[in-house]
Length: 153
Image (cartoon, rainbow, N blue to C red; front, top):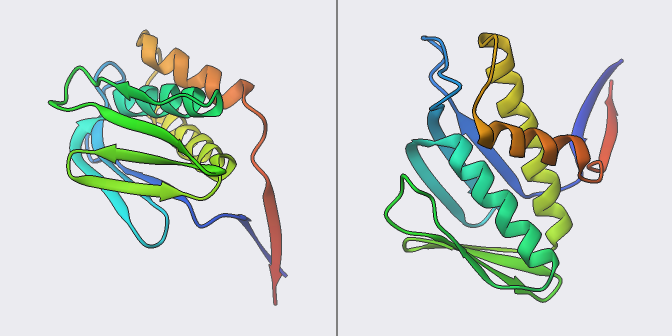
């Protein structure tokens, strides 16, 4: 029997890193996509560590009921976060996404951040990047995502 581990959410954060060459842990560049199954925010060829740091900062502010504009040093515009009902809204450039529950976003962010760190760990011996420490702390210390196990025959 095959078991598929699948988050119980429709919110997804996906990254794409060109792994044909060794990943630079100081400046990890790739694409990031944030989607809720109906709308999407995508940024191509960007510094993924900076994006994860901004998303972590934003979700922490929203959990405290605060609006926040988070600057990404390498990007021309900030990412805006605002609480919305039980969820949140994210705005970047002319793109926006509404998330029903902050916990869904937190779960998706934690899963994507863990995936990102695993890719870096598989190709790099030592990480002296301070943003990676912030991301690792978020993955290690935030409440665990709720995962459902579905069986398929």
